[in-house]
Length: 459
Image (cartoon, rainbow, N blue to C red; front, side, top):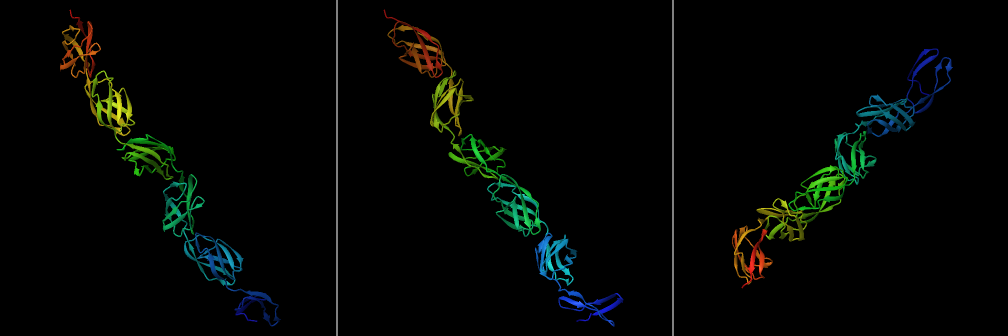
């Protein structure tokens, strides 16, 4: 019933008319000429579209859902000055649109035959990127705090280790996020960060099996430390620490996944537990014993023959587990550990004065002097005969007679003897049967050759 705002007769077959305002819905359009009023055709007044929401309101682009009214018959969806890549009118209240490439904040509008809607803001968010991750490995049990560095990390919504979500994460800045790793299987996984701008590329984080120790050798060493200990086990690659009790090894070297060598620190006498720590955790422990250094307080006898063979008793402390007894630079022929305070050793061949030491896993003891003494020799005895009743004073001449401990006439000891010098001994002959007997002198250097002494029956 409302006249057009204006109209123009173009020809006998065409008129253009400017529609007046009208309520939403259909109206009948007619043309009147002097010949009368035409039949009517339907024209629809359409309500202007409105937008009430768009989801998501930020992102790298992609699918966006527009909600509002009067969206039927939409002819355009724009993000700023750029048309949506595509859109679908779901209903009069909903449109889905594929956002074009863009940046910053843009106004989104919908155009229908009813006009162009109000605008809502859509924020383009850059896709996150990762450039590094520290540490790159951790235990299969998880709980490693991993620092992720990159860009566009603000508003991080998820951090994943493979397909598993991080136990927790904290956004420190646009370039850094820390995340606590979840448990995972041995091997690498890809760590990614998701923000409203999308999901980053992945960086590798390696789950490492916990280290295990099966043996260590040697199992003991001196309290002063310095022993190189070989640790054998599994998953030892990347070891970050070796501890002897609560004390770190002086140094250590990872030889392979199954072996680490470590230099023991100083420690108090007794056992400590040795462990290895890797990114996979801390191993089980094995016992290592710190042993006090041996000490010598006495040796007897303190001298013996150059030919060796003397049984020498060494007295001291911490002698258990002795591995060597040395006379100067020469090892004892043999030795026996009697107790923690005593060792018997068979002296080797030698000469002069030498230092005797004992070595154990606790180190090498102080030294005590042992003197090699030359074997005595006899060159003459005067007189060379005497009565069977004994009592004759016999002068024995020779060399290396100092320290004589016995003078014997056959198997019978002299009644007495006196060491006059290194070349002379006087001895009182014992009683015995008539006939020759062999006279010898014994010193720490051994027993001399023999000379003949004749006992003569009294007339």
